[in-house]
Image (cartoon, rainbow, N blue to C red; front, side, top):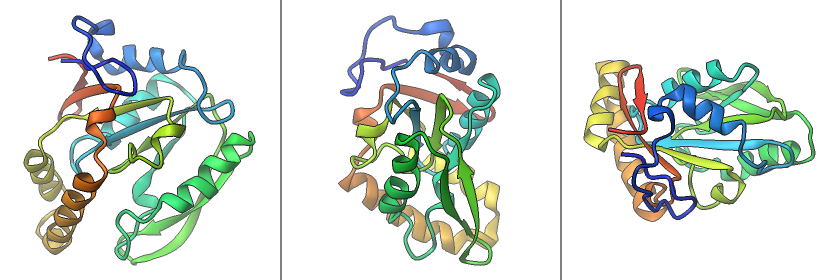
Length: 205
């Protein structure tokens, strides 16, 4: 089902544009009102392993020139969710001025910030990652999408993707993620709930 009722996330029966597929959703994004300067900042949130990166790639492919910010680039082993200040000062502030954003990129293998990336003030900018709809970020979003996949299902996908060598990391991550969403939930504030299965995403089921 699609929940498409604005910031409160209230359901509107029968609202299912174009079957809710990424192509129809991408067309809708371009028509949103800008939320940060001239940028339509779109958040894609959900549990780790729910398909956020895959959806972001699909939407970006439908909107050529649309950049994607992966919140994993701003997080680290020491601070899974302590990236808000960097996001607001290094990404949102320059985009609001119509400038290119520059931000550090974390290497999860080397456990250090070893690179940097840029983000242009494009008409649509996708922000994907766990916590993309947190309360400090929501006022800057033109739209918030939640990948409505149960945590145990999403985490099982993520563990399968990363392999047994990352089991210890996933144990710590799951505890941290549960704590984060208990304190700062995103799902109740989503404009759209989408299902995810492999490479397919649907806003209606």
